[in-house]
Length: 605
View 1 (tube, rainbow, N blue to C red):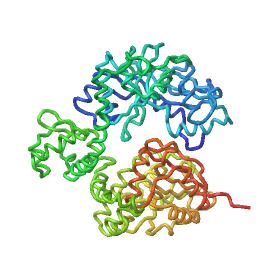
View 2 (view 1 turned 60 degrees about the horizontal axis):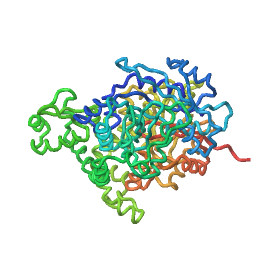
View 3 (view 1 turned 30 degrees about the vertical axis):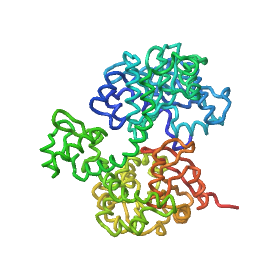
View 4 (view 1 turned 180 degrees about the vertical axis):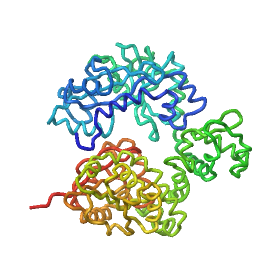
């Protein structure tokens, strides 16, 4: 395990606390943003949160038991072979199944109302010095086996078809399933929508009994899906031999009902319509933010449309239409004749911690307009923003102080990804060093990341390098946080990176630029870094396996707006090497980001 890899005990403890604390209603809202009102009630009435699952990597069974005990979980919970995870790991990493010792343990955890739940722990034994260490690092970073499970109460085909349709309507996609005869249960797997806020991307619906028609409709009639279903739930059986799921092609009784087939035939058109109207949601959110509707609404007490229209200066009838749409996407909720703000909508309040209002205004403003030129970018390779506005976005914003301030605030709205960074071993070690240590934040914006680092480590001193117009805003922010006396400021460009510091930060910078410019920036950093210094780079990483991620969306955004791009970890590794640096390791951060630990490459002979 590398220095920055999340500790398995901490992950296990976090999963247990998650299971203990989450009520079903709140978790469903997080899992499916936009789910509210009658649809939320329908889903919550028919299923309950049952367990969270994760994969850990103890050196042996004794270490697994010790970790369970450290997390106040029953260390004597029996374990069983886990066939499916072993097969999935072997496929993902090109390994022989016989060389993988994977067990499954389900210690009990009480829910918030003392209801019985479990943490489903898959454990791959990774002895010290094992070649499986790289597998463990990959799996910790990508979390393929983590999922949330919901038990369906009183399942019948009509209820199950309705639950599947409801999940699909809110962006969840089928991801396999099967029937387990040992537990007499049907399992339906889904991938959660990319914008889920639950922290888990895989969802399981478990229904007691055999439901072949529902399973067939979930899997579709494609034989490949049916073949995949044959092993998808063997783990729950506690037995390496799993019964194949019903094959709709071979068993006419397993075919879905006629109305379900008709629904499936219409679903692609509905899905495409939902995608085509995504721009409407962007503008609805931007108008909501521009009118300051979240500031005028309460999260508990509904407000009538006429009073709200007077408060924000809007036409009552038109505002009512907007509010109905915002309710559909989960920003507001309708109660009686009025509307209240949801937890999702509260993120658009001006004074909310981590407010995303500025981001809504940017994505519904300049960046929305620039996407009109996406076709030009794809045809010519030229930056859409430059084509539309006649200059690059940094120069364009610098010319307009209000727009520049909005851009800086929109960058601050994404600062949630920074929250774990101060706990990075590099920064912890710098704070514990015998002498005073200095952290330089290169192009550090208004100081969100540097402020978190200095607040967490009172012995560190900081230097923030930024454009002149941004330095003033950073000074105000850090002074207001009581950190100004430990921070120096330097107005300049990448060529002005201060030399001699102990830690350098480069956050959300490299994705703005093409490879050639990235090499220049990194060479400036390398020249400034003493031999002992560390560089921490924060960026979104494109998945190596091509799976869905926020980085894929931002890759398109960067191409159209800056001429930059998102990259895979190995791509960044090559850029570091070209600049005389080396990638030590990387660890995941919130919002699809990662922190890459970089050091100077050893001098040649």
